[in-house]
Amino acid sequence: MNTVVERELELKLVLSPERSIPVPARLTYNTADPYAVHVSFHIGSDSPVNWTFARELLVEGVFRACGHGDVRIWPTKVDSRNVICIALTSPDGDALLEAPSAQVSAWMERTLRIVPPGSETAQLGIDEGLAELLAPLPADDLWLRDPWPSDESSPEEGA
Image (cartoon, rainbow, N blue to C red; front, side):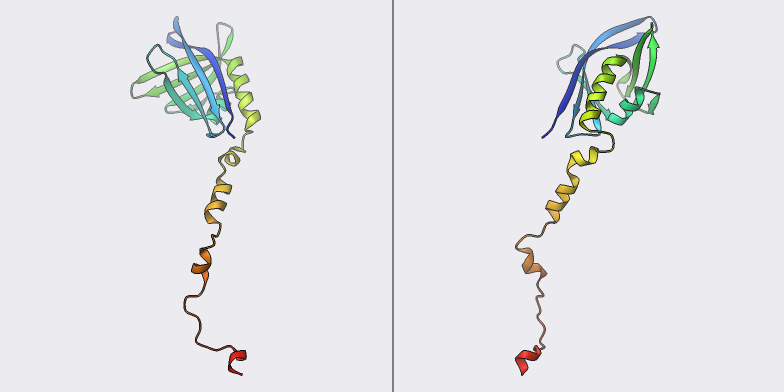
């Protein structure tokens, strides 16, 4: 059974050091995809903007700067508030978002209780799936038998 952990929160899209605008967002974690976190940004369009990245990246980003390329995350203080900065880069442009540290950390802790780090593979059921694929079927007996029995008679038959 899959478990989904969601959290609605308001992020700030940083436009300049003096100006930011609120962006409603939803954090989603699904045990069916245990290595990933999903963020949906509701920016006033018909459909939200969705980003998916490694859960491990967000876990580490709560404590220290991490990531490179499309997603970078780091903790900081802004106006005496603890925030987590998330820098996103795409062909359409760049975005710097500030997320409330306490809310993200609490949500992250819930995901870690459900699927502890290092146990993600067990959620995928890879071992069970392989065992099912490799399990012998009744028809396999036909393939496993020697199609060319030996011409030699056994000693009991020739006596």
